[in-house]
Amino acid sequence: MTETTPTIPYGRLMHEAVCGVIRQVLDGVAQDGLPGEHHFFITFDTRNPGVDLADWLRDRYPEEMMIVIQNWYDDLVVTEEGFAITLNFGDAPERLTVPYDAILTFVDPSVEFGWRFERTDEEEDGPDGDPPAPDDDPGGEPDIEAAADAPHDAEVVSLDRFRKNH
Image (cartoon, rainbow, N blue to C red; front, side):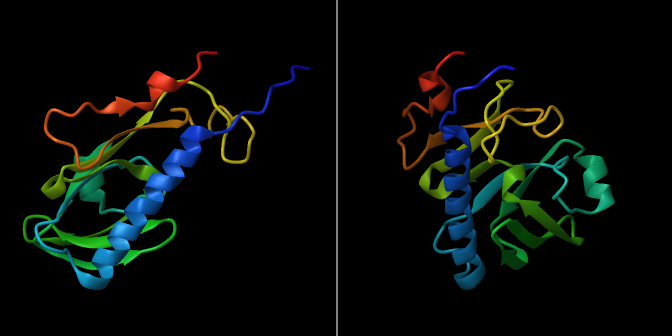
């Protein structure tokens, strides 16, 4: 029997923290609308089991999809797990449900703010402290790159740079 040394799941903790920021931002927009010039580009994994969207959209975007929350959106509902929104696709309003775990990028270009979640092949501890089962998380733990309020020539730093090699 092989013993593993417990480690702090920094990747999972960062993922949860960033999802909390996104939730707070979207919750504010749901309550008060978009302030000023703010708008969002959100890319998400359409294969995530929690994603709910029309069949024709899933056929058109079988792996990932980017939505824009800017000029026309309706009925934004924000929960602890994700958000639901009605968007207009060529004069056809469609309801989408997106869990935070499905989000790949969240960008507000009006203030040069963005997050990108990346999946790696490394196996790390899951949220319960145990390594994920082979089918639980085929992409591994998310890595996060961030650029917040950065000038155009700012470097985006990957957390991979600080990760200890196994």
